[in-house]
Image (cartoon, rainbow, N blue to C red):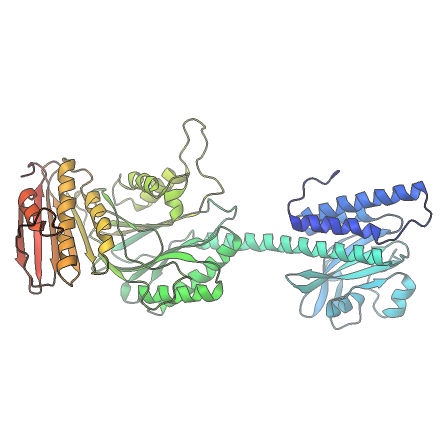
Length: 592
């Protein structure tokens, strides 16, 4: 199309074709001459070009400047004005060609008999082909400049967001015969102007929303004595200043600290709007004193009622600074990472439920209880931190671990900056360009550290604890992964395999031979190369394990045999309720 560029959507194509059809509504040429036919083709070309430009206009002023391209001797457009309606009056928001009609100089009460007010109230256009007709129909409503140098007028309602919100005024230098074709053309232009206003208003609203949310997420809430928080937000995706990711730090009753991190599906402004409302709702539920499970249940119901087509992942936790106890509920969100004082990073697998908006049951978000020791750091993040730059969950986790492990735990802010540099700012050695782009997901990050009472030298200890319920047999693989993470720098890879095997056997024995939960505790102590690993598995059953001689094809009965063969030490310790089976491996001793 000459001068028009490419049409971006089927909707714009339909608008252009409708304008093309308007010329044919004028009827056949009266003179039948070649010059008349040429004029008609020229006008049709002008209609198409102007219609296409209107469909692409990005501001109201740009759209008003395009409309005069439609003018010719039969449509002598001289001036335009856009009136916006509030609750009581119409006022001018933009104009071209009118004098003394800007801003507060032009105001019309909505209950008056002015043609613009009549168009808003009825939703129907008002066409005034001559000054005599204007004076006859609306004699008392001559506004300053409205009739100066004009001989015909059209007042067309502007429809935005499904309702009449204003009026487009087209004024002409000579009387105009308001044929069906002219009326249809003006009506179509008014509809295109309404769409331009929608786009302009949406862009302004999106920008204001993005700025407001971005500003709110640049401030981390207050911590509490004994707990330090660092947080970051990077809007890498969607082209907005903020997307669907968010975090919050909340002061709770009794000196506790609440942390929440989440990600609403999508990267558009609708996701940002839903995020803002969901964020406020979770804050309110937490302030009411609900526990993590109840907060997520209510948030899921809230989101489902708000928008049934979107979901959100989320983690909410309560932290007790006196004991380091964390009570955590998870809704489909990536698992957190625990950084030990010596830099070892463990992916903490937590029980959880479906994302918010998909799960409405009262018991869908079990509470996980962890104890954060002094100088240990818990990292919560959205999946953008892991997957940005073309990584999958595994390779992205390795990248995060390598960035999180170095450095002292005292520099929490520096640790957060290092994580973002590793993800957002790496350079491709061949192309020398950032690996992230606007098509990638946003990033939200929280680091929570339990502070030491007094400065102390680097600890040579690592600890791991978790609980497997009877209905969590599938989490055995996650327990094995955490043991491997605890021993990531153990001198003998074969002994790491041994530790994983023995731990899996002890946990499996509890789940298979009792009806109790299995509580795992692992402690690693000593200097590098001379460390000792102690693993304890406790349950509340009084049935003491005993050695059996399993057959060649037996699927059970090997646990104690393997302990005898592979552990450096092991035993069974009675407890006030139940028992503990433990084993030890020493780094500087070969397997027995």
